[in-house]
Image 1 (cartoon, rainbow, N blue to C red):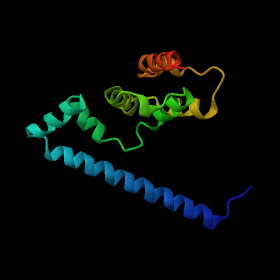
Image 2: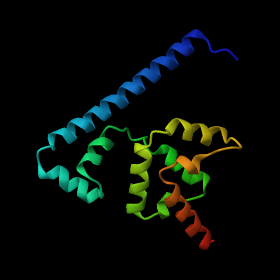
Image 3: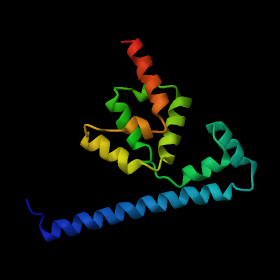
Length: 139
């Protein structure tokens, strides 16, 4: 099935607009964090989140979809994120957001290859395994 030129142009334009919006949102987050740089407020916020101020600055660079692969992985493992301790979920999100292997993870989630290696490279492997084990105890 071929996509007509006007539809392709519209789709590409929409993707560009969405990418621009995401970039501006991330920039706003970074700028907001930068204004707190010399204040105790940044340290207080980071402490409340259970992370360092440096990690907070790094996370501000990510968009709101940075942990979407985590949610897909949890769905695949039949883990309900609404039943995970909030501190544990935040740590899972932080690790996923900072992972450099998102492309491999996305490929394995989408294509489900026979030789999938996700537990070996996932920074959340141990926590997800513990949550899976815990959820099976309550079944």
